[in-house]
Length: 79
Ligand SMILES: [Zn+2]
Image (tube, rainbow, N blue to C red):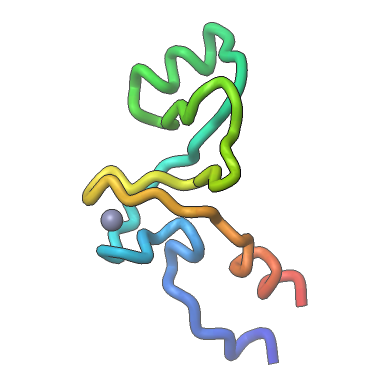
């Protein structure tokens, strides 16, 4: 019954705190020119050179919440 899965259109990209779909990926480690430009544009957020134990993978541009994307949305689609 994969057709019956009820998920928001933004899937796991939606902010769990405020529900905003305006979220971006958090990246770690070395950046190159392309990534630097994406960070400057706000397309992604740089989380630091090394991920911490709690290393969020998504950042909400509306409320600045950060969380780990568990990929449940993609897993649901694969079933
Ligand atoms: Zn939010």
